[in-house]
Image: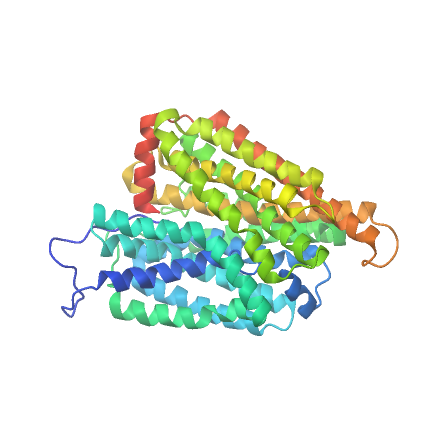
Length: 499
C-alpha cells in the first residue's frame, strides 16, 4: 500500500535504546491491526438488520451509508496515509491511526441515531487509511528481504484474505449473543493492545527520500466522492431532477475537477497521473473500480434477504458466506499457478465473466423462497472463484512495467480504486433496487407478501446491474491490459513485497 522502506542492516534489528526487536511480537501487533481494518469492511454487514431496527432506519438507501461511509474515507485517504507514514514516521502514524480507530469505534457503538453512526464509520475509514499502509511498511522494515519477509507477508496476505469471512462470522456471533453495538466496541480493547504493543515492540522508521504530502488533494477527492454518493443514495427520495440532487452532483463534479487540477499542478501530487500512461496500469485500476462496484452487492443484499426476508439469525447468515471465502482462496491459488503460463489477460477476462455469471443467476432466480443450497450457494461459489482469479491477475497487471520506486504507489492505487468502486457501486445498486421496488410494489403496508416480493425483485435488479459492472471489468481488461507471462509473474512477486 506504500513504498517499502530501506531494509534493515546486517545483524539483529534494534531499538534506539539497544533492545533487540522481537520480530514475532511485532508481527502479531501489525497483523492484529490489519485484521481490524479488513474485517471492519464486513463485520457490520450481518448487524445491518439489527441496526435498522434499533435506530429506526426504514430506508435501505440510508442503511447503505453504514457500509459506504467506511469504504469511502478508507479509499479516499489511503494514498495520503502512505505518504504521511513515510514522511512523519511509520510507527507514529500507525499509533495515531490505531488510537483514532478506537475512538471512532467507541463513538459508533454509542451512537443513538444513524447520522452519528455514519459519522463514526467515516472516521473509522480515515483511521484505517492511516493504519494500513504504515503497518505494511513497518513489516518490511522489521523483516529482512528474502525468506523471512516472504513468510511474514504470507501471514499478512492470509489475514487479508480471511478478514472478510472472520468479520461476517464474528459480526454474527456478537450481534446474536451480545448486541450490534459490540461489532464496534470489540475494536476498542484490540486497538488499545495494538497501540501499547507498537510503542513497546515496533521500531520507528521513516523514508529519508519522502517529500511532501497532498492533504488538499485527499480532501478534494474524498469530498467529491461523498457528494457523489450522497446524490446517488438520496436521488430516489429527492427526485433525480430536483435541486438537491442536481446541486450535489454539481458539487461532486466541481470537487473532483478541482482535484484533477490540483494534482496536475502539485509538485508532490497524491496521484501521479504519469502512471496512467501505462495501458496495463490504467486497465488494472479501472478493472478494480468495476470489480469493487459489482462485488459489494453480494454481502449487502443477501444479508438483508437472509435476515429480513427469511428470518435467519445473524450467526447463521455469517456462516452462510463462509464457502465464499474458501472459494476465493481456491480461485487465487489457481490463478497463481496459471499466471506464469497464460499471462493476466485470460484471467482478467475469465474471472470477472465467471463472477458476472454467478451474479446474474442471483439477479434472475432470487425470490423470497429461493433455496440457499440450489441457488444462493452455487452462485456465491461461482462469484468467489471468479474473484479469486481476478484479484491475483489485477495485482500483477497493476505493477507490471512500473519502476520499482513506484510499485508501492501503483499497488495503493489498485486498493484505493477497489474501495472507491465498492462505495460508488453500492450507492448505484441501492438506488436502482429501491427505484425498482417503488415501481412494482403494491399499495399497502411493507409487511405484506406482495411488498416483500417487490423488495426482493429490486435486489434482483441490483444483482443484474452488478453483473454488468463485472462484465465491464472484463471488457476494460481485455481492451487495455498488455502484459506478458514473464512480466506478470515478476510483477506478482513485486506486488507481494509492497502490499
